[in-house]
Image (cartoon, rainbow, N blue to C red):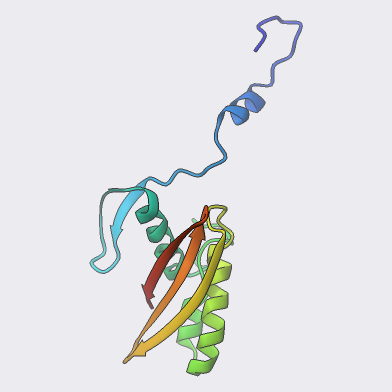
Length: 138
């Protein structure tokens, strides 16, 4: 970086070059079952938390989030959809909700299990060639 007044310096460009393109993984810890927020989580635990929170957040309903964040799972479950329709639409909706994030390369191998009024969805996410098993209760 030159300090001469003869050479213009674009500070914003220099800052952008110094910053990494990777998104940070450290975030606040959330216990979704009990609704408790506390501590911090990092790494794979933070990614898993992001996945669950994204799936459980209704898309287009909260102005704090942009239109890419969240899913339409709630709309599917609120309808009188058959299990066959849910088996095709839930994977599509989850993939659409997660793949916008640059950290997630792939979402695949979905399995839905219904127990009473609860629906369990298990699948795998791929991040930097690492495969992470997920299970979300909807």
